[in-house]
Image 1: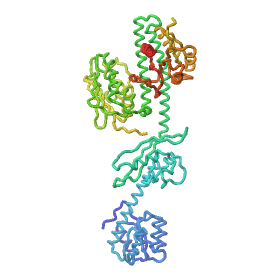
Image 2: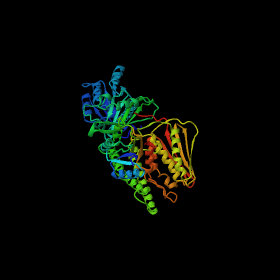
Image 3: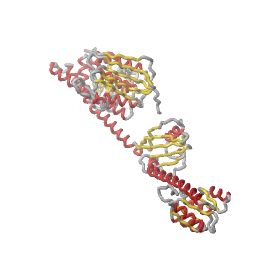
Image 4: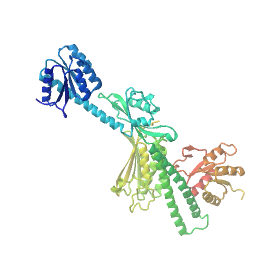
Length: 489
Length: 127
Protein backbone atom coordinates (compact mmCIF):
# COMPACT_ATOMS: atom_id res chain seq x y z
CA UNK A 1 0.00 0.00 0.00
CA UNK A 2 1.29 3.42 -0.83
CA UNK A 3 0.80 5.84 2.03
CA UNK A 4 -1.11 9.09 1.54
CA UNK A 5 1.17 11.49 -0.25
CA UNK A 6 1.65 14.26 2.17
CA UNK A 7 4.44 16.21 3.78
CA UNK A 8 2.84 15.98 7.18
CA UNK A 9 0.63 13.41 8.81
CA UNK A 10 -3.05 13.89 7.98
CA UNK A 11 -5.39 14.09 10.99
CA UNK A 12 -8.66 12.28 10.43
CA UNK A 13 -11.75 12.04 12.65
CA UNK A 14 -14.26 9.25 12.20
CA UNK A 15 -17.71 9.94 13.67
CA UNK A 16 -19.94 6.86 13.62
CA UNK A 17 -22.13 5.11 16.17
CA UNK A 18 -21.17 1.70 14.79
CA UNK A 19 -17.95 0.52 16.41
CA UNK A 20 -17.36 -1.84 13.46
CA UNK A 21 -17.07 1.09 11.09
CA UNK A 22 -14.89 3.11 13.50
CA UNK A 23 -12.48 0.20 13.93
CA UNK A 24 -12.33 -0.61 10.23
CA UNK A 25 -11.64 3.01 9.30
CA UNK A 26 -8.99 3.36 12.01
CA UNK A 27 -7.25 0.24 10.82
CA UNK A 28 -7.26 1.09 7.11
CA UNK A 29 -6.36 4.76 7.46
CA UNK A 30 -3.66 4.25 10.10
CA UNK A 31 -1.97 1.81 7.75
CA UNK A 32 -1.80 4.68 5.29
CA UNK A 33 0.04 6.81 7.80
CA UNK A 34 -2.83 8.97 8.99
CA UNK A 35 -3.49 9.88 12.60
CA UNK A 36 -7.03 8.68 13.27
CA UNK A 37 -9.36 9.72 16.09
CA UNK A 38 -12.92 8.46 16.61
CA UNK A 39 -16.17 9.71 18.14
CA UNK A 40 -19.22 7.60 18.98
CA UNK A 41 -21.82 10.21 18.07
CA UNK A 42 -22.31 13.71 16.71
CA UNK A 43 -22.09 15.47 20.08
CA UNK A 44 -18.77 13.87 20.94
CA UNK A 45 -17.55 14.60 17.41
CA UNK A 46 -18.36 18.32 17.63
CA UNK A 47 -16.71 18.53 21.04
CA UNK A 48 -13.51 17.02 19.60
CA UNK A 49 -13.60 19.30 16.54
CA UNK A 50 -13.83 22.29 18.85
CA UNK A 51 -10.77 21.10 20.74
CA UNK A 52 -8.47 20.32 17.83
CA UNK A 53 -8.11 20.69 14.10
CA UNK A 54 -8.80 17.81 11.73
CA UNK A 55 -7.93 17.76 8.06
CA UNK A 56 -10.63 15.27 7.12
CA UNK A 57 -13.80 14.18 8.94
CA UNK A 58 -15.73 11.05 8.03
CA UNK A 59 -19.22 11.31 9.42
CA UNK A 60 -22.15 8.91 9.42
CA UNK A 61 -25.39 10.59 8.43
CA UNK A 62 -27.68 8.48 10.61
CA UNK A 63 -26.75 8.71 14.28
CA UNK A 64 -28.65 9.12 17.54
CA UNK A 65 -28.46 12.66 18.93
CA UNK A 66 -26.77 15.19 16.67
CA UNK A 67 -27.16 13.97 13.08
CA UNK A 68 -24.37 13.77 10.53
CA UNK A 69 -25.98 16.59 8.56
CA UNK A 70 -25.81 18.84 11.65
CA UNK A 71 -22.16 17.96 12.19
CA UNK A 72 -21.53 18.86 8.55
CA UNK A 73 -23.23 22.26 8.93
CA UNK A 74 -21.20 22.96 12.05
CA UNK A 75 -17.90 22.13 10.35
CA UNK A 76 -18.70 24.11 7.20
CA UNK A 77 -19.48 27.15 9.28
CA UNK A 78 -16.75 27.03 11.91
CA UNK A 79 -13.93 25.15 10.20
CA UNK A 80 -14.00 25.91 6.48
CA UNK A 81 -10.54 24.37 6.02
CA UNK A 82 -11.70 20.93 7.11
CA UNK A 83 -12.93 18.52 4.46
CA UNK A 84 -16.04 16.45 5.28
CA UNK A 85 -16.87 13.04 3.78
CA UNK A 86 -20.27 11.60 4.63
CA UNK A 87 -20.87 7.91 5.22
CA UNK A 88 -24.34 6.96 4.23
CA UNK A 89 -25.84 3.76 5.56
CA UNK A 90 -28.72 3.69 3.17
CA UNK A 91 -27.17 4.38 -0.18
CA UNK A 92 -29.92 6.77 -0.98
CA UNK A 93 -29.10 9.30 -3.56
CA UNK A 94 -31.16 12.07 -1.89
CA UNK A 95 -29.14 12.01 1.31
CA UNK A 96 -25.88 12.09 -0.52
CA UNK A 97 -26.97 14.93 -2.80
CA UNK A 98 -28.28 16.94 0.12
CA UNK A 99 -24.97 16.46 1.96
CA UNK A 100 -22.98 17.54 -1.11
CA UNK A 101 -25.21 20.64 -1.41
CA UNK A 102 -24.43 21.47 2.17
CA UNK A 103 -20.74 21.37 1.47
CA UNK A 104 -19.63 17.76 1.89
CA UNK A 105 -16.59 17.04 -0.25
CA UNK A 106 -17.65 13.51 -1.14
CA UNK A 107 -19.72 10.57 0.13
CA UNK A 108 -19.05 6.92 0.67
CA UNK A 109 -21.88 4.39 0.77
CA UNK A 110 -21.99 1.58 3.30
CA UNK A 111 -20.86 -1.08 2.92
CA UNK A 112 -17.51 -0.04 1.46
CA UNK A 113 -14.27 -1.82 0.72
CA UNK A 114 -10.95 -0.66 2.21
CA UNK A 115 -9.92 0.37 -1.28
CA UNK A 116 -12.94 2.63 -1.73
CA UNK A 117 -12.20 4.24 1.61
CA UNK A 118 -8.55 4.79 0.76
CA UNK A 119 -9.37 6.34 -2.60
CA UNK A 120 -11.97 8.75 -1.25
CA UNK A 121 -9.82 9.82 1.71
CA UNK A 122 -6.67 10.23 -0.41
CA UNK A 123 -8.59 12.54 -2.73
CA UNK A 124 -9.93 14.49 0.25
CA UNK A 125 -6.43 14.91 1.70
CA UNK A 126 -5.09 16.21 -1.62
CA UNK A 127 -7.94 18.70 -1.76
CA UNK A 128 -7.32 19.73 1.82
CA UNK A 129 -3.63 20.29 1.11
CA UNK A 130 -4.48 22.45 -1.91
CA UNK A 131 -6.84 24.49 0.24
CA UNK A 132 -4.13 24.88 2.81
CA UNK A 133 -1.57 25.95 0.21
CA UNK A 134 -3.96 28.62 -1.04
CA UNK A 135 -4.63 29.75 2.52
CA UNK A 136 -0.87 29.86 3.23
CA UNK A 137 -0.19 31.82 0.04
CA UNK A 138 -2.98 34.25 0.85
CA UNK A 139 -1.72 34.72 4.35
CA UNK A 140 1.81 35.30 3.09
CA UNK A 141 0.62 37.78 0.49
CA UNK A 142 -1.61 39.55 2.96
CA UNK A 143 1.20 39.93 5.48
CA UNK A 144 3.51 41.10 2.72
CA UNK A 145 1.06 43.65 1.35
CA UNK A 146 0.11 44.87 4.81
CA UNK A 147 3.70 45.44 5.83
CA UNK A 148 4.57 47.48 2.72
CA UNK A 149 5.32 51.17 3.11
CA UNK A 150 3.78 51.75 -0.32
CA UNK A 151 0.03 52.01 -0.48
CA UNK A 152 -1.67 49.15 -2.31
CA UNK A 153 -5.24 49.15 -3.57
CA UNK A 154 -6.81 46.30 -5.54
CA UNK A 155 -10.13 46.72 -7.31
CA UNK A 156 -12.36 44.35 -9.20
CA UNK A 157 -13.92 44.91 -12.59
CA UNK A 158 -16.84 46.82 -11.02
CA UNK A 159 -14.37 49.19 -9.36
CA UNK A 160 -15.07 47.74 -5.92
CA UNK A 161 -12.28 47.43 -3.38
CA UNK A 162 -10.91 43.90 -3.03
CA UNK A 163 -7.92 44.84 -0.94
CA UNK A 164 -6.53 48.03 0.58
CA UNK A 165 -3.49 47.85 2.80
CA UNK A 166 -3.07 49.97 5.96
CA UNK A 167 -0.50 52.20 4.20
CA UNK A 168 -3.06 53.10 1.54
CA UNK A 169 -5.79 53.85 4.09
CA UNK A 170 -3.33 56.03 5.97
CA UNK A 171 -2.46 57.87 2.75
CA UNK A 172 -6.07 58.77 2.08
CA UNK A 173 -6.56 59.44 5.79
CA UNK A 174 -9.43 56.95 5.99
CA UNK A 175 -10.50 55.70 9.39
CA UNK A 176 -14.06 54.54 8.74
CA UNK A 177 -15.55 51.07 8.42
CA UNK A 178 -13.98 48.39 6.24
CA UNK A 179 -13.45 49.55 2.67
CA UNK A 180 -13.71 46.05 1.22
CA UNK A 181 -16.60 45.98 -1.23
CA UNK A 182 -16.95 49.75 -1.42
CA UNK A 183 -16.91 51.46 -4.80
CA UNK A 184 -13.81 53.54 -5.47
CA UNK A 185 -15.84 56.74 -5.89
CA UNK A 186 -17.18 56.31 -2.35
CA UNK A 187 -13.64 56.79 -1.00
CA UNK A 188 -11.93 60.17 -0.50
CA UNK A 189 -9.43 59.75 -3.34
CA UNK A 190 -10.15 62.68 -5.68
CA UNK A 191 -10.83 62.32 -9.40
CA UNK A 192 -7.53 61.27 -10.93
CA UNK A 193 -7.29 57.91 -9.23
CA UNK A 194 -10.75 56.67 -10.37
CA UNK A 195 -10.05 57.88 -13.90
CA UNK A 196 -6.74 55.97 -13.91
CA UNK A 197 -8.63 52.86 -12.90
CA UNK A 198 -11.16 53.37 -15.69
CA UNK A 199 -8.34 53.74 -18.16
CA UNK A 200 -6.54 50.65 -16.87
CA UNK A 201 -9.70 48.52 -16.96
CA UNK A 202 -10.40 49.69 -20.49
CA UNK A 203 -6.99 48.66 -21.78
CA UNK A 204 -6.63 46.09 -24.52
CA UNK A 205 -5.93 42.64 -23.18
CA UNK A 206 -2.57 42.52 -24.90
CA UNK A 207 -1.46 45.97 -23.75
CA UNK A 208 1.36 45.69 -21.26
CA UNK A 209 1.24 49.31 -20.29
CA UNK A 210 1.10 50.57 -16.79
CA UNK A 211 -0.18 54.04 -16.04
CA UNK A 212 1.93 56.34 -13.93
CA UNK A 213 0.68 59.62 -12.53
CA UNK A 214 1.61 61.98 -9.81
CA UNK A 215 -1.26 62.59 -7.39
CA UNK A 216 -1.55 64.89 -4.43
CA UNK A 217 -3.93 65.16 -1.52
CA UNK A 218 -4.36 67.75 1.18
CA UNK A 219 -3.64 71.44 1.34
CA UNK A 220 -0.73 73.58 2.48
CA UNK A 221 1.57 71.93 5.01
CA UNK A 222 -0.51 68.74 4.88
CA UNK A 223 -0.16 68.39 1.14
CA UNK A 224 1.35 65.07 0.14
CA UNK A 225 2.50 63.80 -3.24
CA UNK A 226 2.22 60.26 -4.52
CA UNK A 227 3.72 58.56 -7.51
CA UNK A 228 0.91 56.25 -8.50
CA UNK A 229 1.16 53.19 -10.71
CA UNK A 230 -1.95 51.50 -12.02
CA UNK A 231 -1.87 48.14 -13.80
CA UNK A 232 -4.81 45.99 -14.94
CA UNK A 233 -4.67 42.31 -14.08
CA UNK A 234 -6.17 39.52 -16.13
CA UNK A 235 -7.63 36.08 -15.72
CA UNK A 236 -6.49 33.01 -17.62
CA UNK A 237 -8.34 34.05 -20.76
CA UNK A 238 -6.63 37.46 -20.60
CA UNK A 239 -9.77 39.40 -19.76
CA UNK A 240 -9.24 42.38 -17.45
CA UNK A 241 -10.71 41.45 -14.09
CA UNK A 242 -9.45 44.30 -11.99
CA UNK A 243 -6.72 46.84 -11.38
CA UNK A 244 -3.91 47.18 -8.90
CA UNK A 245 -2.67 50.56 -7.76
CA UNK A 246 0.59 51.13 -5.96
CA UNK A 247 1.16 54.51 -4.35
CA UNK A 248 4.57 55.74 -3.39
CA UNK A 249 4.82 58.76 -1.10
CA UNK A 250 7.26 61.16 -2.76
CA UNK A 251 6.51 64.20 -0.62
CA UNK A 252 9.97 64.23 0.92
CA UNK A 253 11.56 64.00 -2.52
CA UNK A 254 9.41 66.83 -3.80
CA UNK A 255 10.42 68.99 -0.88
CA UNK A 256 14.09 68.25 -1.46
CA UNK A 257 13.61 69.01 -5.11
CA UNK A 258 12.00 72.33 -4.31
CA UNK A 259 14.85 73.14 -1.93
CA UNK A 260 17.34 72.32 -4.64
CA UNK A 261 15.53 74.49 -7.17
CA UNK A 262 15.32 77.37 -4.73
CA UNK A 263 18.98 77.00 -3.88
CA UNK A 264 20.05 76.93 -7.50
CA UNK A 265 17.94 79.99 -8.31
CA UNK A 266 19.44 81.80 -5.36
CA UNK A 267 22.96 80.92 -6.38
CA UNK A 268 22.27 81.96 -9.92
CA UNK A 269 20.97 85.33 -8.94
CA UNK A 270 23.41 86.02 -6.14
CA UNK A 271 26.48 84.76 -7.95
CA UNK A 272 25.67 85.82 -11.46
CA UNK A 273 24.76 89.40 -10.72
CA UNK A 274 28.13 90.41 -9.29
CA UNK A 275 29.83 88.29 -11.94
CA UNK A 276 27.99 90.17 -14.68
CA UNK A 277 28.89 93.45 -13.19
CA UNK A 278 32.56 92.41 -12.85
CA UNK A 279 32.65 91.41 -16.49
CA UNK A 280 31.19 94.75 -17.52
CA UNK A 281 33.76 96.59 -15.46
CA UNK A 282 36.57 94.60 -17.01
CA UNK A 283 35.18 95.27 -20.44
CA UNK A 284 35.08 98.98 -19.72
CA UNK A 285 38.76 98.77 -18.68
CA UNK A 286 39.61 96.75 -21.78
CA UNK A 287 37.89 99.27 -24.03
CA UNK A 288 40.21 101.93 -22.63
CA UNK A 289 37.31 103.94 -21.24
CA UNK A 290 39.14 104.32 -17.93
CA UNK A 291 42.49 105.25 -19.44
CA UNK A 292 45.12 103.69 -21.65
CA UNK A 293 45.69 99.95 -21.26
CA UNK A 294 49.09 98.45 -21.91
CA UNK A 295 49.46 95.34 -24.05
CA UNK A 296 50.36 93.26 -20.98
CA UNK A 297 47.38 94.55 -19.00
CA UNK A 298 45.10 93.87 -21.93
CA UNK A 299 46.30 90.29 -22.10
CA UNK A 300 45.70 89.69 -18.38
CA UNK A 301 42.29 91.36 -18.53
CA UNK A 302 41.29 89.30 -21.55
CA UNK A 303 42.23 86.08 -19.83
CA UNK A 304 40.34 87.11 -16.70
CA UNK A 305 37.32 87.94 -18.87
CA UNK A 306 37.43 84.53 -20.54
CA UNK A 307 37.62 82.73 -17.17
CA UNK A 308 34.74 84.80 -15.87
CA UNK A 309 32.75 83.99 -19.01
CA UNK A 310 33.33 80.29 -18.40
CA UNK A 311 32.09 80.59 -14.83
CA UNK A 312 29.04 82.45 -16.01
CA UNK A 313 28.28 79.70 -18.56
CA UNK A 314 28.59 77.08 -15.89
CA UNK A 315 26.08 78.85 -13.68
CA UNK A 316 23.65 79.07 -16.60
CA UNK A 317 23.99 75.41 -17.42
CA UNK A 318 23.61 74.37 -13.80
CA UNK A 319 20.38 76.31 -13.70
CA UNK A 320 19.18 74.68 -16.92
CA UNK A 321 20.09 71.24 -15.65
CA UNK A 322 18.28 71.76 -12.41
CA UNK A 323 15.24 73.08 -14.23
CA UNK A 324 15.17 70.01 -16.46
CA UNK A 325 15.66 67.64 -13.57
CA UNK A 326 12.84 69.22 -11.64
CA UNK A 327 10.64 68.66 -14.68
CA UNK A 328 9.98 72.33 -15.35
CA UNK A 329 11.15 72.33 -18.92
CA UNK A 330 9.49 69.17 -20.21
CA UNK A 331 6.04 70.60 -19.67
CA UNK A 332 6.63 73.40 -22.12
CA UNK A 333 6.36 71.28 -25.26
CA UNK A 334 4.98 72.39 -28.60
CA UNK A 335 4.72 71.18 -32.19
CA UNK A 336 8.11 71.90 -33.77
CA UNK A 337 9.17 72.20 -37.37
CA UNK A 338 12.33 70.17 -36.80
CA UNK A 339 13.75 70.79 -40.28
CA UNK A 340 13.55 74.56 -39.77
CA UNK A 341 15.08 74.23 -36.33
CA UNK A 342 18.02 72.23 -37.72
CA UNK A 343 18.52 74.80 -40.43
CA UNK A 344 18.53 77.66 -37.93
CA UNK A 345 21.02 75.89 -35.69
CA UNK A 346 23.41 75.03 -38.50
CA UNK A 347 23.25 78.56 -39.85
CA UNK A 348 23.78 79.97 -36.38
CA UNK A 349 26.92 77.91 -35.73
CA UNK A 350 28.53 78.33 -39.17
CA UNK A 351 30.40 81.54 -38.20
CA UNK A 352 31.78 79.79 -35.11
CA UNK A 353 32.97 76.89 -37.23
CA UNK A 354 34.45 79.27 -39.80
CA UNK A 355 36.68 80.78 -37.10
CA UNK A 356 38.47 77.42 -37.08
CA UNK A 357 38.19 77.08 -40.88
CA UNK A 358 35.70 74.26 -40.26
CA UNK A 359 32.33 73.81 -41.90
CA UNK A 360 28.96 72.32 -41.00
CA UNK A 361 26.98 70.22 -43.48
CA UNK A 362 23.30 69.49 -43.02
CA UNK A 363 21.82 66.39 -44.68
CA UNK A 364 18.06 65.95 -44.50
CA UNK A 365 16.92 63.67 -47.33
CA UNK A 366 13.13 63.80 -47.01
CA UNK A 367 10.58 66.15 -45.47
CA UNK A 368 10.67 65.72 -41.69
CA UNK A 369 7.51 65.39 -39.62
CA UNK A 370 6.78 67.93 -36.93
CA UNK A 371 7.76 66.73 -33.50
CA UNK A 372 6.22 67.46 -30.15
CA UNK A 373 9.13 68.78 -28.15
CA UNK A 374 10.53 71.62 -26.13
CA UNK A 375 12.02 74.14 -28.55
CA UNK A 376 14.65 75.55 -26.22
CA UNK A 377 15.62 72.05 -25.19
CA UNK A 378 16.12 70.89 -28.77
CA UNK A 379 18.14 74.02 -29.54
CA UNK A 380 20.27 73.37 -26.48
CA UNK A 381 20.92 69.76 -27.52
CA UNK A 382 21.97 70.74 -31.04
CA UNK A 383 24.04 73.71 -29.84
CA UNK A 384 25.96 71.52 -27.42
CA UNK A 385 26.59 68.72 -29.90
CA UNK A 386 27.58 71.06 -32.74
CA UNK A 387 29.89 73.25 -30.65
CA UNK A 388 31.48 70.11 -29.18
CA UNK A 389 32.05 68.86 -32.71
CA UNK A 390 33.74 72.12 -33.63
CA UNK A 391 35.75 72.36 -30.42
CA UNK A 392 37.04 68.82 -30.39
CA UNK A 393 38.16 68.68 -34.01
CA UNK A 394 41.30 70.19 -35.50
CA UNK A 395 40.73 73.31 -37.62
CA UNK A 396 39.47 72.72 -41.15
CA UNK A 397 37.16 69.84 -40.21
CA UNK A 398 33.63 69.13 -41.35
CA UNK A 399 30.76 68.58 -38.93
CA UNK A 400 27.98 66.50 -40.49
CA UNK A 401 24.46 66.87 -39.17
CA UNK A 402 21.88 64.36 -40.44
CA UNK A 403 18.26 63.73 -39.63
CA UNK A 404 15.89 60.98 -40.72
CA UNK A 405 12.84 59.05 -39.53
CA UNK A 406 13.23 55.41 -38.55
CA UNK A 407 10.90 53.15 -36.54
CA UNK A 408 8.73 55.92 -35.14
CA UNK A 409 11.78 57.83 -33.97
CA UNK A 410 13.47 60.91 -35.31
CA UNK A 411 17.18 60.05 -35.58
CA UNK A 412 19.51 63.02 -35.51
CA UNK A 413 23.27 62.58 -35.74
CA UNK A 414 26.06 65.06 -35.27
CA UNK A 415 29.36 63.64 -36.53
CA UNK A 416 32.83 65.11 -36.53
CA UNK A 417 36.11 63.75 -37.83
CA UNK A 418 38.03 65.09 -34.88
CA UNK A 419 40.15 63.78 -32.03
CA UNK A 420 37.70 61.10 -30.89
CA UNK A 421 37.07 60.03 -27.32
CA UNK A 422 39.19 57.38 -25.53
CA UNK A 423 37.18 54.20 -24.86
CA UNK A 424 37.68 54.48 -21.09
CA UNK A 425 36.06 57.92 -21.12
CA UNK A 426 33.12 57.03 -23.37
CA UNK A 427 30.73 55.81 -20.73
CA UNK A 428 31.39 58.74 -18.48
CA UNK A 429 31.11 61.65 -20.85
CA UNK A 430 27.43 62.14 -20.01
CA UNK A 431 28.23 62.57 -16.32
CA UNK A 432 28.12 66.01 -14.84
CA UNK A 433 31.43 67.87 -14.71
CA UNK A 434 33.20 65.06 -16.56
CA UNK A 435 35.65 66.32 -19.16
CA UNK A 436 38.08 64.45 -21.32
CA UNK A 437 41.48 66.04 -20.77
CA UNK A 438 44.36 65.29 -23.09
CA UNK A 439 46.84 67.28 -25.16
CA UNK A 440 44.15 68.08 -27.75
CA UNK A 441 41.46 69.29 -25.40
CA UNK A 442 43.43 70.80 -22.53
CA UNK A 443 43.13 74.32 -23.86
CA UNK A 444 39.37 74.13 -24.53
CA UNK A 445 37.11 76.04 -22.17
CA UNK A 446 34.13 74.05 -21.00
CA UNK A 447 31.89 73.45 -18.05
CA UNK A 448 31.59 69.68 -18.21
CA UNK A 449 27.83 70.10 -18.11
CA UNK A 450 26.97 70.25 -21.81
CA UNK A 451 26.51 66.52 -22.41
CA UNK A 452 24.79 66.00 -19.05
CA UNK A 453 22.34 68.64 -20.22
CA UNK A 454 21.93 66.92 -23.60
CA UNK A 455 21.18 63.61 -21.89
CA UNK A 456 18.69 65.16 -19.47
CA UNK A 457 16.83 66.96 -22.23
CA UNK A 458 16.67 63.97 -24.57
CA UNK A 459 15.52 61.68 -21.76
CA UNK A 460 12.89 64.13 -20.64
CA UNK A 461 11.47 63.66 -24.16
CA UNK A 462 11.52 59.87 -23.63
CA UNK A 463 14.33 59.64 -26.14
CA UNK A 464 17.83 58.23 -26.00
CA UNK A 465 21.27 59.58 -26.81
CA UNK A 466 24.19 57.43 -27.98
CA UNK A 467 27.80 58.02 -28.83
CA UNK A 468 30.24 56.21 -31.12
CA UNK A 469 33.82 57.26 -31.24
CA UNK A 470 37.14 56.12 -32.62
CA UNK A 471 40.24 57.75 -31.27
CA UNK A 472 41.86 59.86 -33.95
CA UNK A 473 38.96 59.31 -36.39
CA UNK A 474 36.05 61.20 -34.91
CA UNK A 475 32.91 61.03 -32.88
CA UNK A 476 29.24 60.59 -33.79
CA UNK A 477 26.45 61.52 -31.40
CA UNK A 478 22.99 60.19 -32.18
CA UNK A 479 19.81 61.18 -30.40
CA UNK A 480 16.36 59.69 -30.92
CA UNK A 481 13.14 61.50 -30.21
CA UNK A 482 9.89 59.49 -30.35
CA UNK A 483 7.40 60.76 -32.92
CA UNK A 484 4.29 59.36 -31.28
CA UNK A 485 4.75 61.20 -28.01
CA UNK A 486 1.34 61.69 -26.52
CA UNK A 487 0.86 64.57 -24.15
CA UNK A 488 -0.61 63.72 -20.82
CA UNK A 489 -2.68 66.55 -19.49
CA UNK B 1 26.25 119.29 -26.92
CA UNK B 2 22.51 119.48 -26.74
CA UNK B 3 21.93 117.11 -29.66
CA UNK B 4 23.30 114.18 -27.67
CA UNK B 5 20.50 111.65 -27.14
CA UNK B 6 19.49 110.77 -23.59
CA UNK B 7 19.50 107.15 -22.52
CA UNK B 8 17.96 106.08 -19.24
CA UNK B 9 19.66 103.10 -17.58
CA UNK B 10 17.66 101.35 -14.84
CA UNK B 11 19.37 98.57 -12.83
CA UNK B 12 19.72 97.89 -9.12
CA UNK B 13 23.41 97.06 -9.52
CA UNK B 14 25.17 100.43 -9.27
CA UNK B 15 28.49 99.08 -10.57
CA UNK B 16 26.76 97.81 -13.65
CA UNK B 17 24.98 101.12 -14.19
CA UNK B 18 28.30 102.96 -13.90
CA UNK B 19 30.03 100.66 -16.37
CA UNK B 20 27.15 100.99 -18.83
CA UNK B 21 27.14 104.75 -18.43
CA UNK B 22 30.87 104.99 -19.17
CA UNK B 23 30.44 102.96 -22.33
CA UNK B 24 27.38 104.93 -23.49
CA UNK B 25 29.04 108.26 -22.76
CA UNK B 26 32.10 107.17 -24.72
CA UNK B 27 29.70 106.58 -27.61
CA UNK B 28 28.39 110.12 -27.32
CA UNK B 29 25.14 109.50 -25.49
CA UNK B 30 23.93 111.33 -22.40
CA UNK B 31 22.98 108.99 -19.57
CA UNK B 32 20.35 109.22 -16.83
CA UNK B 33 20.50 106.62 -14.05
CA UNK B 34 17.88 104.99 -11.85
CA UNK B 35 18.18 102.04 -9.47
CA UNK B 36 14.73 100.48 -9.42
CA UNK B 37 11.46 100.54 -11.36
CA UNK B 38 9.78 103.23 -9.27
CA UNK B 39 12.75 105.54 -9.56
CA UNK B 40 12.96 104.77 -13.27
CA UNK B 41 9.42 106.01 -13.77
CA UNK B 42 10.23 109.27 -11.89
CA UNK B 43 13.23 109.90 -14.15
CA UNK B 44 11.10 109.48 -17.28
CA UNK B 45 8.65 112.08 -16.01
CA UNK B 46 11.54 114.46 -15.29
CA UNK B 47 13.08 114.15 -18.71
CA UNK B 48 11.93 112.01 -21.57
CA UNK B 49 14.75 109.67 -22.74
CA UNK B 50 15.32 108.63 -26.35
CA UNK B 51 15.67 105.03 -25.16
CA UNK B 52 15.60 102.99 -21.96
CA UNK B 53 17.81 100.12 -20.87
CA UNK B 54 15.86 98.24 -18.25
CA UNK B 55 16.94 95.42 -15.97
CA UNK B 56 14.38 92.67 -15.34
CA UNK B 57 15.03 91.74 -11.72
CA UNK B 58 14.81 94.81 -9.51
CA UNK B 59 13.37 95.65 -6.10
CA UNK B 60 10.09 97.59 -5.66
CA UNK B 61 9.04 97.33 -9.31
CA UNK B 62 10.65 94.92 -11.74
CA UNK B 63 11.51 95.52 -15.38
CA UNK B 64 8.59 93.51 -16.74
CA UNK B 65 6.13 95.57 -14.73
CA UNK B 66 7.61 98.95 -15.67
CA UNK B 67 7.86 97.90 -19.30
CA UNK B 68 4.18 96.86 -19.35
CA UNK B 69 3.10 100.09 -17.71
CA UNK B 70 5.01 102.30 -20.11
CA UNK B 71 3.96 100.38 -23.19
CA UNK B 72 0.30 100.67 -22.16
CA UNK B 73 0.59 104.41 -21.53
CA UNK B 74 -0.01 106.59 -24.61
CA UNK B 75 2.35 109.22 -23.26
CA UNK B 76 5.32 106.87 -23.07
CA UNK B 77 4.67 103.93 -25.34
CA UNK B 78 6.92 105.35 -28.08
CA UNK B 79 10.04 105.21 -25.92
CA UNK B 80 12.03 102.19 -27.08
CA UNK B 81 12.91 99.73 -24.31
CA UNK B 82 15.76 97.23 -24.21
CA UNK B 83 15.46 94.65 -21.45
CA UNK B 84 18.46 93.21 -19.64
CA UNK B 85 17.86 89.59 -18.68
CA UNK B 86 19.98 87.96 -16.02
CA UNK B 87 17.94 84.80 -16.11
CA UNK B 88 19.82 82.11 -17.93
CA UNK B 89 17.10 81.27 -20.35
CA UNK B 90 17.78 83.31 -23.40
CA UNK B 91 19.11 80.88 -25.97
CA UNK B 92 21.32 82.63 -28.47
CA UNK B 93 19.32 81.67 -31.53
CA UNK B 94 15.95 82.96 -30.43
CA UNK B 95 15.41 86.40 -31.79
CA UNK B 96 12.02 87.19 -30.42
CA UNK B 97 11.59 88.91 -27.12
CA UNK B 98 10.42 86.05 -25.02
CA UNK B 99 11.88 85.49 -21.62
CA UNK B 100 11.13 83.29 -18.67
CA UNK B 101 7.82 82.30 -20.17
CA UNK B 102 6.68 85.91 -20.36
CA UNK B 103 6.07 87.65 -23.62
CA UNK B 104 6.90 91.27 -23.13
CA UNK B 105 6.25 94.41 -25.09
CA UNK B 106 9.92 95.40 -25.04
CA UNK B 107 11.53 96.40 -28.32
CA UNK B 108 14.57 94.22 -27.82
CA UNK B 109 16.55 92.48 -25.14
CA UNK B 110 20.13 91.56 -24.37
CA UNK B 111 21.15 88.73 -22.08
CA UNK B 112 23.55 89.20 -19.22
CA UNK B 113 26.54 89.01 -19.22
CA UNK B 114 26.28 91.99 -21.52
CA UNK B 115 28.52 92.35 -24.51
CA UNK B 116 28.99 96.13 -24.46
CA UNK B 117 29.71 96.47 -28.17
CA UNK B 118 26.67 94.36 -28.99
CA UNK B 119 24.59 96.56 -26.71
CA UNK B 120 25.71 99.72 -28.49
CA UNK B 121 24.77 98.06 -31.78
CA UNK B 122 21.29 97.25 -30.49
CA UNK B 123 20.88 100.74 -29.05
CA UNK B 124 21.76 102.37 -32.39
CA UNK B 125 19.42 99.99 -34.27
CA UNK B 126 16.53 100.55 -31.91
CA UNK B 127 16.72 104.30 -31.37
